[in-house]
Amino acid sequence: DIQMTQSPSSLSASVGDRVTITCRASEIIRSSFNWYQQKPGRAPKLLIYATSSLQTGVPSRFSGGGSGTDFTLTISSLQPEDLATYFCQQSYSSPLTFGGGTKVEIK
Amino acid sequence: EEQLVESGGGLVQPGRSLRLSCAASGFTFNSYAMHWVRQSPGKGLEWVAHISWNSDNIGYSDSVKGRFTISRDNAKSSLYLHMNSLRPEDTAFYYCVKDSQAAGHWYFDLWGRGTLVTVSS
Image (cartoon, rainbow over all chains, first blue to last red; front, side, top):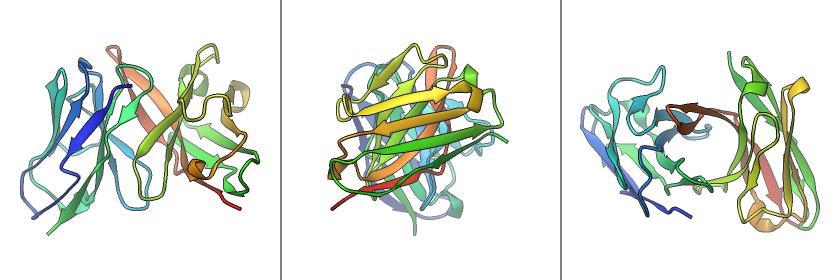
């Protein structure tokens, strides 16, 4: 199975800060990589698919990048409504696997 | 509006069975593969099973293989998960998830709100 390692596991930042979350796959997964946002008490929601494609309706302050084994999610200007846990996922091979999550808190 | 609504969760004793259902609406259900994904309270996400649009292709995680069965009824726009020989470690929120793809890359673009399964004596 492909292991997905996310870092950091949690972070605290101020409104307006630039925030970057990283995810490393245990083997090359091309661009078959996605990011999800889960707000407290809610189901996960797709943010970015195929490494860098923004899902419809997601604010443009979110962006994704990377290739091979290393990927990033960047929030260009953190907003109060971005309080959530963010999960990465590889969709390159079965079983589809997720990272452990990054909890983003607002200072 | 696209929507997935799970049902069937609850408290069940170890070794017993449970069937989860998922009702889909707002999209052409029989055109998409579907998945079940679970999340233990306060923990991460674990993919459980998938089924292709026509049920020809089915897969399971090692942790549930041989105990869980995924199925679908396209006429009813419904997805199911039959869970047998339940264990305490199966305790989790179970999400029904719609699969989509673009340029050969797959992703989960619609999630239900989840149904909680608690396995305990």
